[in-house]
Length: 390
Image 1: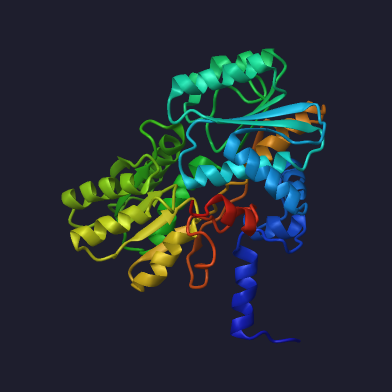
Image 2: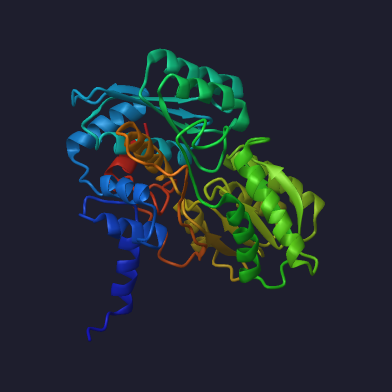
């Protein structure tokens, strides 16, 4: 049997974990490397089949046009208009998620127009954006519903207008199957519990855990934090969430939040949070406070800049566990809506597999944008163009 060298093994790991490139990969390849399994809902399989289609120079140019302008004609002559109503689009993770949706839409010849909007964290604006799409007569609306149940009435308006609506990333805006087509997410409650377990895996003696969240009151953070608190209480032995802090999903927000935590507590064993790139601000807070990086952090996303920071720190007590950026949920949500528009059966709840993994050396690739998620399906050349310095 062929025995691979350590260098060869490392190179294979980088290929499996790096963002999708021009190298041909099948849908099964992508699912295995991103989800850890090829056993998933048929909608997910269909979405990954489209994601595996080649990104030509022409498709990339059109995708960048759509991404920069927030509205574009695809040039296919397709009759369908698809729209993405983002509750908050002003960070890199959301920007990559937006591109996932755009690239996915461009693999469907029936899609003739692509629209995008960000409510910038304003629930009133989020409602207005969706109502505008209804007025325009779009065929599909994909929603990142940061405003949660406040969107329920306007989502029902969209359904009554015959629009296929899907929601992704763990928020509810009514009842899936009745008020809209489908909800696409990981097990968000399970993720909160998995965060706590990951901290305890990194440090079995960990008891004091801080939960960081995004914009104040957002339902995504609220859901997993509540489940994390419940799970910590079930573990007992002093394990508890000692503080919850909002960060607005920014590095500066993390710096402020963690600075406040360090001023209040002498010892923090672990942090749990959605956003890896944002947590880089927390490291600056430790540096400013002249405190050692002696904690475990469990994260949902996997922007590699934090992994580079981890390599640079070279501190044995500093450990990171991560799940997946899950940027590609916008692809799955779009595919689900388009399948529903074709009259196909779509489950009301589509669970996206996830697992917690320890950060290891080799995940940091300084040839890639530091803001890039390790698991994104957006190809390398597109990522570089998206985040090129102006």
